[in-house]
Structures are given as C-alpha cells and as structure tokens.
Image (cartoon, rainbow, N blue to C red; front, side, top):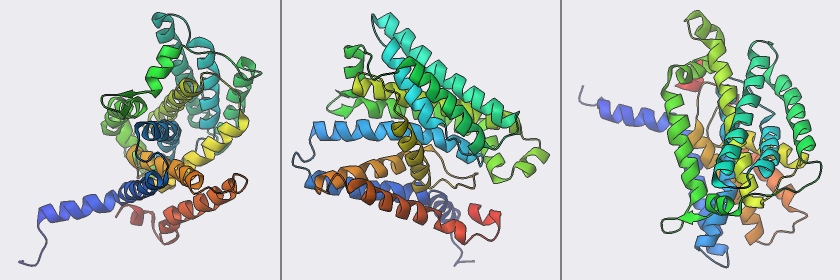
Length: 334
C-alpha cells in the first residue's frame, strides 16, 4: 500500500518511542543547564562546567547503581550506604606511592563488589524482598563506615584526586571521561550480554522468564554486584572531591532517594524491564541542575530543601504518570 510507512520510518518511530524517557531527560537537562550558565555570574566557564560535572557524576554513578536492580523490579536501598562506606575506605587507602594508590583503588572497588554480592545472595537465595534486604544490609555498610571513620577526616593522594576531578583536553571534565569510560567498559557489554538481556526479561515477567529457561537467579545476582561496583566508584569520586571521608548518614540517605528519582526521571520503569543507564545519567544531571538553579536564583538556603522536594515530587510523578494508565503490563513495552 502506498500509504503504509516504510520499514525505516517504522524503525525510527519505534526507536523514538522506546527512548522517549532518555530523550526527554536529555532535552530537559540541556534547557535547564542553558538557563543555569546564562544566569551564573561566571557564565559558561571551564570552572563552572567542571564543578557541575563533578557533582552530576557523583549522583549519576549512584543512580546507575540503583537502575540495575530496578530493571529486575527490585529496589536497592543500600546504594547510599555503599557510597558512604567506599568514601570512608578510600580516605584511608588512597595515599602514598602510585602503586599504593592503585592498590587502594582496587580494594575500594572490590569492597563495592563484595557488598553487591552480599545483597544479591540475600535477595536471590534468602528470598527476601529487595527493599527489606537492602535496608538491612545498608545498615551494616553504614556501621562499617562508622568503624572506619568515627569522625570526619583522612587524607588522599592529592595528585590522584586533582587528576580525577580536573579537566583534560581543552577543558573536558575528567569525571565525565570516567563516566563515559565506565559506560563503555561495563554498562554496554553488560546490556548486550546474555545476563543483561535476562535482567530485562526478569523485570518484564520473572515467572515467564523462568519458564523460558532464563537464568533468573544469576541475572538478579549480577545486577546487585554491579550496583555495588557503581556505588563504590561514586564513593571514590567523592573522596577525590573532598580529600577526606565521613560516615554521613544524611548524605547516604539523600543520595539513595535522589538515585530513585533520577531513575524515574531518566525513563526507567519502576515496574522493571525497560530503561537503562543512559537515561538515568541525564536524570541525575537534571536533579543536580535543579539545585544549581536554586543557587543562581538566590533562593533562601533554608527554603531550598522545600523547593527541591516539590520539584522532585513533580518530576517523579510525571515520570510515573504512565503507570497510572497501564491496564496490562504489556502496555509498558509497546
């Protein structure tokens, strides 16, 4: 039929429909960041961009950690505690010679993996609800953080910290390079792997995935392991920004809640089975830019949490509005 759309047009429409969430989050971030640099006294300077990037990358890594369990219809309330624990551990180990620094980085990342393994084992083989299991394990990780840093302090190799939070190649924030590199090395191979596709299948329907021979247990376990890794990377980046460590429960709780909001704003369904890290990254940068806008518009610091809470509520509500219209789960994937 002459009026039928071409296969290429159909593919384009399907791509736009399936990536609607990330595209909207990206457009929102660009618009908000444009307003921010326009109103900022320093404008679009290298320092402004680098500072915004460093803050956004912190939340982006924690939000990616949250995205992985959400894809399987889970929720990880321990990502903030792993983030804080890794910060405290890094402030103890990232010192000395380059070899000692490299060993310290490896230990910090390994600690995140171990936290993820524990979360996954409790959820998968302990058969506990993820939200309950990770609430309990998160308390353990925070206890370890307190043991490591009963008071704020520590130190870090300044050359390493400055390199991780500085700029390269004409003012490009190195934290963005780290984020992109992690996506290329970890997320994309995982997303295209058997276990990555299995995680989406589990989130769509765990029962159907099991009946189809999908390795449900392994798929869920790997999501929590990788979540621990991403949260630990965020803790390492925080140490490089602050040159110290602190077992701050409020910080961990704030990042946990913000990570859930970033996941939703980035287009990942809390039902599981759809979404991904790319949209989550833009969702995280949107949330960080909200705070920057409140600063440049000189909103009373005492009122900023109120405004930020309202904006987050609206953003999450709009992101979840589609769920209210769902009559069948298959409608989510059309």
